[in-house]
Image 1 (tube, rainbow, N blue to C red):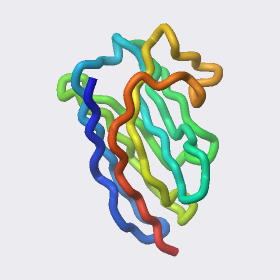
Image 2 (cartoon, one colour; image 1 turned 135 degrees about the vertical axis):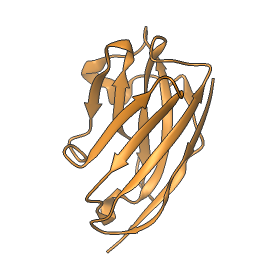
Image 3 (tube, rainbow, N blue to C red; image 1 turned 180 degrees about the vertical axis):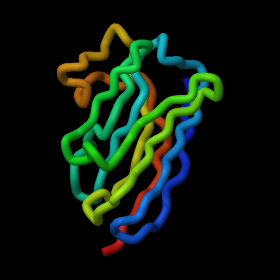
Image 4 (spheres, rainbow, N blue to C red; image 1 turned 45 degrees about the vertical axis):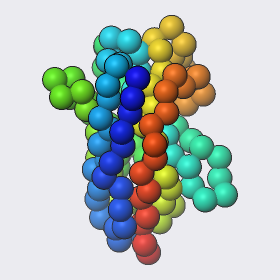
Length: 126
C-alpha cells in the first residue's frame, strides 16, 4: 500500500484548500481511508474518514460543517475539501488506511492505522 498526499500550502483564515491522497494497493473494499493531522506541539488527531465500501463518513467535531471528505474510486483518490479554515487548522495532514477488520466506527480516530502517507503541511494565517 502506498499513499501520496498533496495540496497543502499557506492560506489566510477563511480560505479553502483541497488535499488529495493518491492511493495504490488499497481500496474501500479493503477498509477505511482518511485523514489525520498533527499540529505543532500537539498529538496527532483524526480529522475525517470514509469507512469502507458502505461509504460512511466520520468527522471530528472540530471540522464538521467545514471539511468534506470524498473518494473517487475510479481514480484511486481520496480528497479533503477544507473550507472556512482557521489558524487552529494549521498542521501536517496525513492520509491513512485502516483494514476493515480493525476499523471501529465508534472510535474511528483510534483505529490502528495500516499505512501512513507522507504528510502535507497546511498553514492558516490569521
